[in-house]
Image (cartoon, rainbow over all chains, first blue to last red; front, top):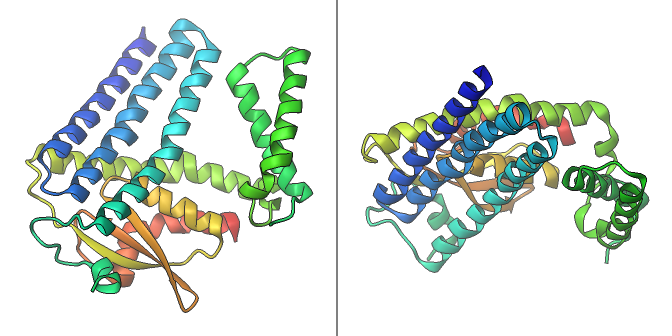
Length: 114
Length: 172
């Protein structure tokens, strides 16, 4: 029973962070800030849900193989997510995407543009 | 073309085989033997693409423990702190931001260390590594930062100071 409650709390916390990230994606003013908010979903949002389901799989279902698969899913997301982020951020900037309100500090433009 | 070395094959084989065991999660002799054969074939063909430096660190328990400690203790703390900060900004209307791209020097020398650090920075909400540049032997990251409060060395200390210290002993 206690384990059930801990698992539920973890999943709820994951959902809270995922909600925060989603609000950020919808309301942030420019592409790069939106990407920053979306990282919230794919880190703690995902990890909370995964840890919760891991506890549930081990202690309630008693299935180690399900737990291992959940662990592998979490690992895969953690390993592949930053690579996509690098590529999207750099690609967007090189393509000419700029915030409406110019950034105060922009070393990238200083070194590579114009 | 790079040569296939024995430590590189061994390291790739161990990782492949561990993944096989994790995914199948059955310990009959037949399954393990099949996994070993497939892992060895994959390792022989692909080791030279994966391992570009000395593969020996993989078998040094002290360094491996340090890396494990980094992923289990140090990084999650930073991750939670950054996540809470980002969630606060999102829930309070997304107006409390001051985005910008800063160029920070990196203290790590090896390719693996730099890759791990760049990925850790991208994984913490609020900072995304956009590009890597090398000038006069010093490596720099271009980092998009949601709340710019400093520049140059100070920005580097604020963004990745603790992560970098944690990774320092692992590869060099």
